[in-house]
Image (cartoon, rainbow, N blue to C red; front, side, top):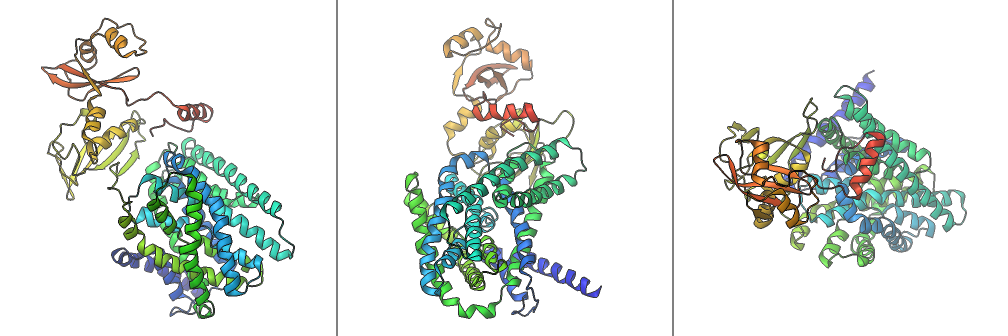
Length: 592
């Protein structure tokens, strides 16, 4: 019993140590994942801690389960808009780029370490994929705001290149285990089965998660537990059936994150904590497994391979793959540099050890050292390089947080939180439309009356429909284009309130189905708002929005026409989701 309690104490102590030392890492700008790895090394057999971990299968189990959680969370926070924007270049990098990188690393590995060609190619394969966990924490937790296309390409690539590298590694391990010559057609078929299974089970798993969360009544705290349980189960089931569990976990997160979920706020907060725990557990376990006393024999070739990977192989693969896409030279340089290696490379390097492949220990030790060098060199310099290349854009002006309201009569509303930007209409004293007025104003840790003039840095809380978020961004976020903001808030054109609906229909060729042809626009506003009319009030009128631009004595004095209304006609994606909604009752509208 004492031994069990000691093990629990040690595990908890390692987690707590990782949490509190992360504060120092943030202040020093150190790569946080490298810190977790270092804690594992210090606590290991060759470090002061002296903890012995020789159970490779257990370490592989911990790492795989943790990575499935991290990949799901990465997909959960990737919008479909960004995915569509970056799918072409990212998938090219995730397939062709992985193969090119593996081949370019295999040659120096053969020469430096004297490995046979299949073994050298296996080492190149373990180092060929970028790490979603490392990139996720570097970009999201690090707080860098990059250009959308660059950021999306990196995130989608890191989430989709793991199955390619894993499939290649499994095929090569199988070849080395049987001693047969590699059958390229067999490897290609295996890869297609891995990818196809990952896509099929990933999309199905995502739909299953949304169905469970939205259709089955559970205690509030059980929803995130169900999500994580289904994620890990889907990952394992996909692997058992010959697909890529890594890809399945990522796609399940992508589907679930872009659907409307009840208890979404609870799920997100739980995921944030469990993802941190998974990250800590995975890297600390990998650090415990490593033996620094074995590193001197391979440190020189490992450093040379790391230099070749970072400065030669990755840039060649990136510049070659992105030659067919519209990326500038600075963007390609940055994407090349941010190809961090991490837990995925170490997990793949465990495969030959588990399979008893000759030189498996060398592959693991070299991969471990290359990962350490990559995290230290690239992780410490990503922000300065992004700033030097001019790829950091001003901080996002979107909402800080969005929480769905699970109350009768408010199912179509969300509690939305904004931090008022200094260069926003709200901070400049612009009168707010009634639909944009906050319920709560928080300044310097204190609650202030909502009637006060807003200041930069204030946090505002308001109830709004998801479709209003784009306009709220214009009010509380950074004002990039004043004319565009004015047009979105108060209309592209101004007309008199005496204009009739028939004249409006004929002038702008609007397909309006109404019998109010002789009614004036002023009468429409009077019918809807009576005398309680304010500037910014809107009427959704067919394909346009009518906006009260000027108001006096309870009457509208001028009317703005917004040609891009809050509620837009459905596009192809909307129609597809609507059909799915009718079939399964899973999704909300596109602006959720």
